[in-house]
Image (cartoon, rainbow, N blue to C red):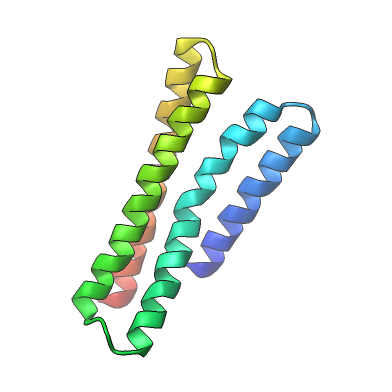
Length: 122
């Protein structure tokens, strides 16, 4: 999943850069929080690898660390998405649709990353 996470992060940054370059600054910046979940998953995996090499953390606690980091990235990303939507979109209907779609996408992405991680461990 490391390759998939890196690919998602790169695609989000390319999409954001293209929107900003075309003059749609608000849309470009509002896409960026989507990259928090894959980035958090990469950080959680690296942290787990670091702790596992030192034999500090047993296997079940290691799974909890990755889950906690992924859920924290989801919560932080959702909070930033909501904050961006209130400052970028002035119509409430557009803001509601944007928040619903992007937060649902990040929640599904978090679920897929965690299920794939647990599948590799078990």
